[in-house]
Image (cartoon, rainbow over all chains, first blue to last red; front, side, top):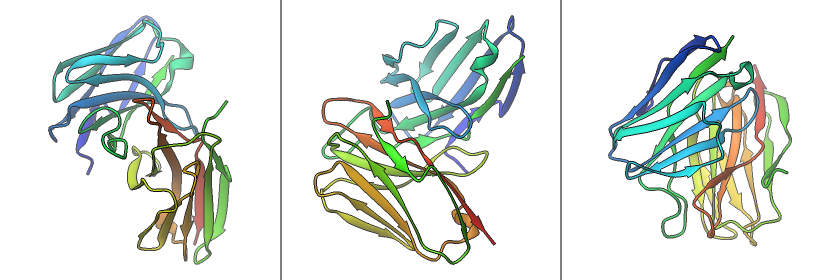
Length: 118
Length: 111
């Protein structure tokens, strides 16, 4: 079982809907990430939160809105999505953001939310 | 342009065979991680290599970081069907807080 929990596992939404993806970790990690993964492709970074503050936004369209209510929770609010936004959305956490001495903090991924936009 | 290129993109082998996956770049990385992602799940960290020339073994998996820290390889001995999945290398550069994922290698081990 993964220590990063994502809900829901599957989500189908219309282009006019508003929905939210949720992510939770209780490992005491202070960095949390949202990635988007298309079929058979590597994950693409969307957002990074460090100590509950947004530190990286990879030029993601405003129809995706992240939120970090506390150090254990990470949300991704979705509004007016396009069919091409259909993908697996992965949440990850790490003890800290970026590189410590010698190596990047390892990422712990959830199992993702499979999103389909119709 | 993919900063970290993996080869091959796809590999289908019989159980018991050996294989090697490569992760190459023209850039120097301070560290490199390898993840495996099984269908329907998120990636899981296998190993982190930090020192140029470093070799790490994880049961039947052997990971190597190139001397110049620009490339890495993953060798699997006597592959099993449970090794099936997407293998991702991911590199960290001193100048960036971002982890850069490679293009991925899909491995299918047939019984």
